[in-house]
Image (cartoon, rainbow, N blue to C red; front, side):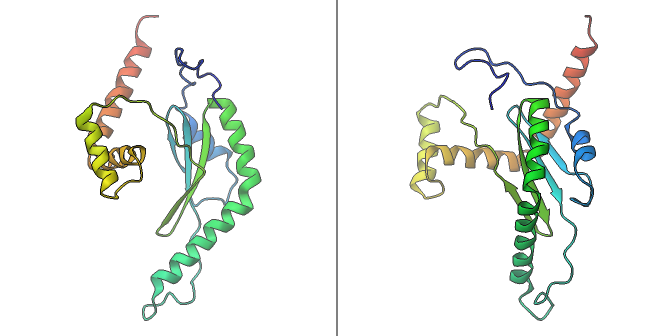
Length: 188
């Protein structure tokens, strides 16, 4: 879906603001799906909704004397698979409404205990121009087997930077929100 995104090579129209997406999903989702309000993350292309599933009952084979980690992980994977299958039609219906409202794709995910799984998220191509030193970094990651391709290497770099600069990025996003608020209050 590229509605409202402009023609290829032409100016890109911004999708409508989705500031109310978290509240909308919290009110729209069926009771009992998640233990609380889902985590809703929005960017220009996608809305990702991740909810916490209700805790599992006591799982056989997860006692202190057993190798409970493997049994617990298997139980969590089974619960996630069941949730994904049982809620598919209803998740599609909710996603269609949200996609119409905000002109973005919707992806789903869940957390169950120590397991977090995302369902069918977007992989968006990003065009960039890199000079030789930057390309050499990517090629080194590929040659070392860290990544399969330059594209994978670039994604790996972005994840690494994101992990190590969460506080700085959070401060930057807060500052950008403040600028938007000031623009909105400016003269009309």
